[in-house]
Amino acid sequence: MSTRLILYIAVMAGVTYLVRALPMMVFRKKIKSQLVQSFLYYVPYAVLGAMTVPAVFYATGNMISASVGLAAAFVLAFFGQSLIVVALTASGAAFIAELMIGAAG
Image: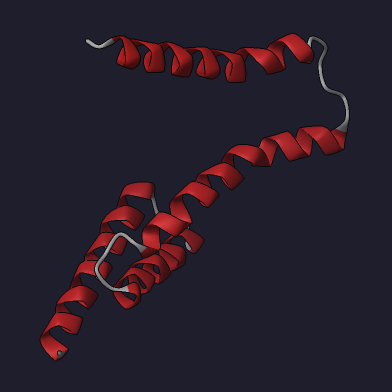
């Protein structure tokens, strides 16, 4: 392995460690503020949404088929379906929409 690759891996390991260890070093006592607790509760969901939603629209060759898959996922998730059902149905809906768009023109 090259020296640069080892350096890149070491820097990423350090950054990953700091991101995880820093909050434990800064917040030694239990957080009692209801506002801060509420904020921290929703951070993982917000980050996951910010990473996932833009990628959904570029996952297929067409924005329309991606939107069909996203709409199917929203409807099923709203009605409390399991993650596997939501994922498979959304993928299938996007695939069928892509086939229909390809057949139409």
